[in-house]
Length: 172
Length: 297
Image 1: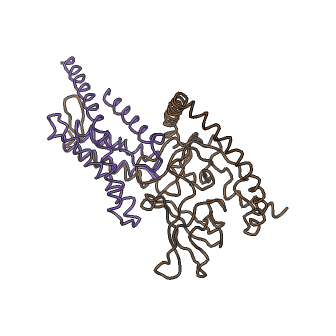
Image 2: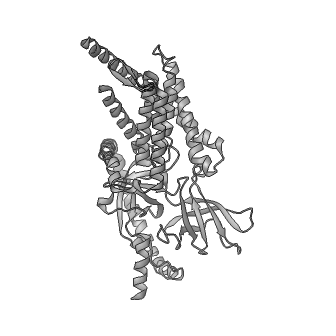
Image 3: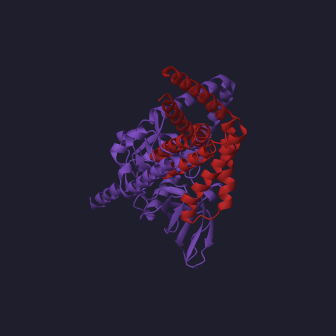
């Protein structure tokens, strides 16, 4: 239960900071994708189920505030969370190489999904333009932000797991 | 025991692929329901977003406070020299103002010629502050801190300075979402001021990297439209009030069909430095009845 509470708090603040950057940067500037960092990080540390649920609610938050209808971002984030969760099995060491490759990788996949669903379907074919001006800059910014953010999430996860272990032992 | 749901010690878990399947169906159902019905704009829905707004407003306050303090400490001497400079500017502006007042008489006469005597300057407006931007980098929409409690309604026009910013898309109690005209999925019915020819202004993510948006579907066989002409909102738009400045034409090209023209234009509003906007509280549907009343009386 404590874990769910933490997820809710992280989700809330990720979303809040992602949309409230208007007072640092112009309205049209490229901004890092904090929600994606949240979903991919926890999916990697906890597995597919966490990735799916966290992705669903992160996407739903975007849908509620900025979508014209509900569910499309939920679907995108959910699948990204699921795929990131697949890497949980090979991620045992707690190193930083895999997450730092996976997070920008997933952000590029997210950008690609957005391009196909929102732009290609409206016959905007300049894929290379969108790749170099939207998708890749966003991935770079996201990577830069995840450099300090991921270790923070990792630390919280270790604490939560230690707490869960302690409580489980108490019941034996 | 179900083959799908497994018990893992105390906890009941569902394998990831079934969970993904279930949640996907839920998402698709949500997409279908919300795109087919008008649930998104209902009052019951808006409380979800309203829960976020106080926090965003708090962040804006903190930001304002930081800016005001840092400005106060650093710049007293700068302010003194700026003050002297501004006094000189006031004198210059006062003389300029006299000339402009003379021009205004001429302008009002010309406006009557263009049937634009109902200028948007006279509309009732509400100021609002931008508190959040779109969560992605693909579309340009943003939230403002006024909502239905302040009398804001869907489809009200939003301006800043002297140009069109966009229109209200969704409204909550104390917030509203504005779709900007530069957004890739936005389109405005416009009109060239000099020739009253209609055209469509559409936002473009690609062109906006150079500060431009696109326009199209202009029928101009007499070649009266040229670079630098003003584009304003048209009379035939059902959402936008007529005569609001959108921008200036920066290029004109003949389409492949040899009938219509299209090109690029520079928006009048500086979207890079947008902090406050004005919401025009007169709606297009009411505006029509006002002008009819006036012509009737």
